[in-house]
Every structure is written in C-alpha cells, then in structure tokens.
Image (cartoon, rainbow, N blue to C red; front, side):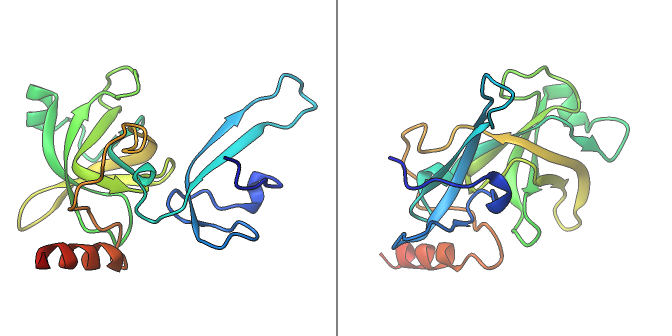
Length: 192
C-alpha cells in the first residue's frame, strides 16, 4: 500500500533503518530500501520509490550477507586462507560503535558479479540490521589483538528475511552501542 508521497530525495534521509518522517502517521516508520526508475522522457524526473516498514525489528531490515565491489586490502597479497579456499572467517563492523560481528569473507559477489580480489561477499552467522549501501564495511582478524584486513563501501545487501519469508531468530546482533532494544529482548528471552 502507498503510505505517502514525497517531494524528492534531497528532502529525505535514506539511511536504511532510520526513522522516516511521514506526515500524519501515528507510528514511526523505517526506511528499508529505495528504487529509482528512469522515465522514458528526459523532461520527466526519475520515479523514486522509498520502501518503509513499521517496526524497528521488521524482517525487511535484516539480511545475512552484503556485497562489496571495491574492497581495499591493507596488504598487497590476500590472506593465505582466502587464497587457498576462497573464503575465511573474520570479524566485521559496518557502523562506528557497532560490536564486531563474526562473518565469513567469500571472494566474489553474490549478485552475479565477477570474482576478483576486490569483489567480496560477507556472510553473517545471524542477520544484521540495516545494511546500507554506501556505508563502509571493515573486516578484522585476530583474537587478543585485532588486525585490520581492509574494507570498502557496501554495494548492496543480500535478500532480506522478509523477501525470503523467513522469521528472525531470537538472537540478533546489536546494531550499535545504543541499541538497547536487542539487549532488552535477549534479557526477556533468557528469563523464559
């Protein structure tokens, strides 16, 4: 259903998972994605649709993989496990204050992109909220001392749990240091 119309993208924040101000709405809405369709005539503007959901933990905000087209490796050679197997375990961060999240680095993109050393897919053990194209993903390895392997701008996220018609698991990664809703949710489930 159409919740409302907008006057153009410059007036709206498009950070996935942030609140969308919709005039007259009695509840808070969250941006899940946007699409832009060019119109046949140059005189017509692009048709841009902003998709929203009505809950901060809606399945359309969660995905368990992301794609990076231009990954910048810190060293000139790939890590040996990645060279040998095309995948390796690591830790990832997509937001400044977000806790490190376990992931698997896979060479190549999941969007049918060519496999190069600068194209990677990050697969998460459990879904991550609000993976936003344009933001940076940085990966690390190590136990006591972390070593940064590199990072790059997020090209896109994988299919959302809503698109896959999957329920969210009980355990979710906090999306940042101030995400108290996850901590409260996990505390409630541990009491049950």
